[in-house]
Length: 99
Image (tube, rainbow, N blue to C red; front, side, top):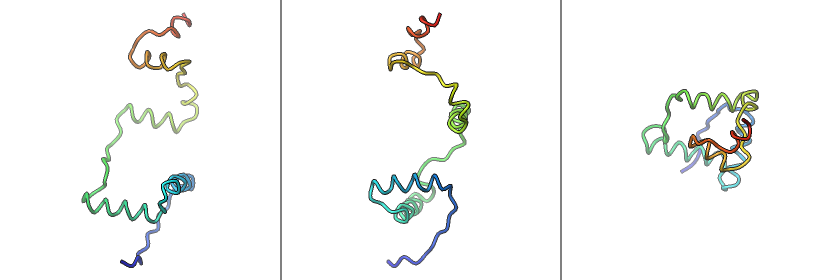
């Protein structure tokens, strides 16, 4: 099939460059990636992934990623054990040392 249709889309330059680097690593051009996406849209009769309004936790995570000041307040862990203890709600040695 002859490709003669054109799509023009405005995207952030950093996003375009980052996506281009990823696509280069897997050997796919941006044009081919867009074609694959559109074929998936047709096959799924909609977007090929779930799109939902983010819940409060997701919005907070997005805000943290987009706001450097909030990132600076993020907890740090010296070991993976401390991280998992925190995730599981256990009192870690880190907290005991701080007391």
